[in-house]
Image (tube, rainbow, N blue to C red; front, side, top):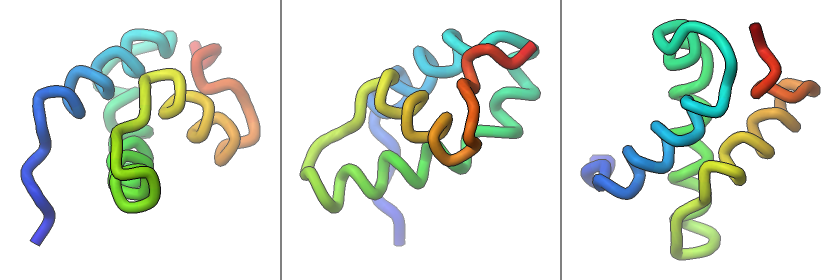
Length: 71
């Protein structure tokens, strides 16, 4: 069972979504699963949470482009 999502995790994801250009619902559909996986990986490896910058950077690396520039 996955542990509950904390308010800090939600705020970090919300900040990352705000930094991506485009429709918010489209962004959530595209990147929410990636952000959740990155958060869970960080918790296991670093025993902490990634920043919004970390979410954006790692996801951009996975997609091979700067996801904040999506239009």
